[in-house]
Length: 75
Image (tube, rainbow, N blue to C red):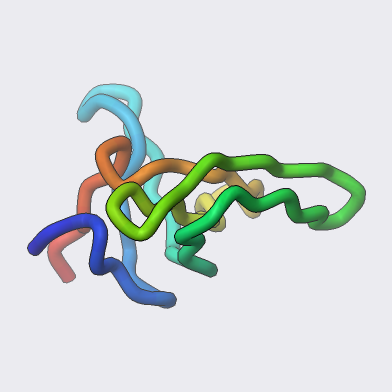
């Protein structure tokens, strides 16, 4: 599956195997975006060809990552 087609709710892995975190896709962005969540500002540069994803990590933090920085977790 191509990472530029991930959907809300899908589980993904961030980082290397020995230091990876697991999270869940919250939103997909296909344009430059700035959002605020719980007082923290997140910014990303994104396009339809290089989307970015807001991911809620298991420890309840949020991160913005591009598709090439995440891996789909087999469920």
